Amino acid sequence: MAGFLTGAGGGSPTGFLGIVQPLVRLKFTVLGHSSDGVRLSRVVFWPGAVLATWGAVLSAGGADARRDVLLLVLAVWGVGWMLGPVFASGAGVLRPAFFSLLPVGRRRLGLALLAAACVGYGPAVTVLSLGAVGVHAVDRGSLPVLPVALLAVPPLLVFMVALSRTVYALMGSAMGSRLGVTMSAIQYGLLIAGLFTGWLAVSSTQQGVAAVVRDGLPGGTAARVLEAFPTAWPVLAVEAAAGGRWGAALGWLLALTAAAVAMAGVCALVLTPRTPVRTSRRRFRPLGSRVLTGRPVLPGTATGAVMGRELRQWWRDPWRSLELQSGAWTGLFIGLIGLVSGVPELLAFTGLALALMTALTSCNLLGQDGTALWLTVVGAGRGAVRADIRGRQAALLVLFGPASVVLTAAFTLFSGEHRFWALASALLPAVLGCAAGVAVLLSVVAATPGVDPKYRVGPNDAGDISYQLWIALYGTLLSALPTVALAVPALLTGRTLLAWAAVPVGVLNGAVAAWLFGRIAYRRLEARLPETFVRLRYGKSIASQQQPDGGGWLDRMERGSVKGNQERKPVGT
Image 1 (cartoon, rainbow, N blue to C red):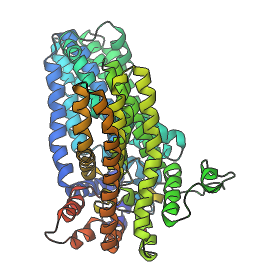
Image 2: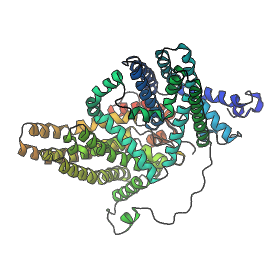
Image 3: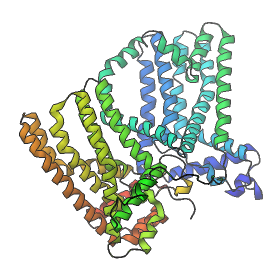
Image 4: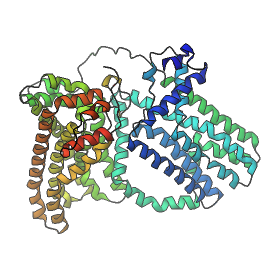
């Protein structure tokens, strides 16, 4: 590959294309070895997006309505390209750091990586969707205007792809600051809250969407705002050409091309491989250090030591902090969605949502730590593994428990739904305990390696957890089923005393689940400690050779995580 990119040994034609061609071939080779889940999502999502785009455009009630629908649809495509890679771990198949040691001009390599990003399944279906602008050209009654619509597609595609790569790279840079982590957490919290309760907002606006497709955007303010973005400029160019204002049409095309060139230049800068620089020496102690290093607060045992380590890591590590803040923002947005959608009852369960997020955000703790498990391997004395698991569980309860209680109390008082006090008080300890147990169990059985911490760039580099998420979600809910079975019917039938009697049942439910799953987790880790480390260190190819045939449900779960999760193999040693 080095010979192809540098042209050494006559392995590749010279020039810019000589760099782009091997990058494109390498990209498709890597994509050909992606997991079955990634391939299935690619086959299902992209054609569905194209059909939805053309369906919305063709279903418009008239020429004016079609114009507004196009403005809205193209803006959605732009936002999708901008935020999609952040939510879908889309750091790009080819990372700039992979080529940092090659003797290739940095700016030239950045442009080549951008050119390679413009080739693939996503850009191809985007071109098909952008072709819907041609329908608007024909709809204006002038077939010669169609070339204007076609000429606008390449620069708009370059603009979207460059914007996508730039936002992702800047998001990775933002992970180095607490403000950047908070901004990323807000986005993830909004996404997850939308997945949980977005159907409420959709159901309340479904008639509005049908009205937009039929009649266009209400008023003229929304359309004027959308026209300010480059995604709308192809539509404006087509309208100018249909009205005989060819100079204005050329101006819109040139403006779109200039925006694409400018965005490509910025993208080439952020895609340029850089050597990490030494950070300045810390002049003050990190926030939170004095809490744990002052007067003894934690027990002076091995479990207390692990608990202190975990609390520091949740506070200082940007990727752990992202998970913690995402859970809090998810609870807040779920309450806001309920408030906006006319379902204030959801406000009483915002703390419950945060408790449930304990399992979802903590189901790959060993994978987030990376090869630090080696310290446990070499120092595994009597009870060390048990202390490690119990300390992690205690840290989760300390971090998520008080915050869940505060959210529940504050939002229940704000909503005035006091009839849910008993239900929330019963479910909260049950879900917290079950989540803490399920999280550590999945962290052991389905540990998935991520990018080595010193090479992490994007918010999702700590490891793929797509397999663990669904198990964590349904496992936590099913584990809390005894409390749900007692508290919910008591509330629905108006038996307040019986609902309050479910509170000790919820506490017992959570305690038993946390103890049982934690016990299974540390016994499993004691039995397969070397194999777990090898899986985190060497990745899927070696881990798949260690999986025993048959076995129990834990073995099947481990094999499923090895096969189902997309590998983000650590870079370096």
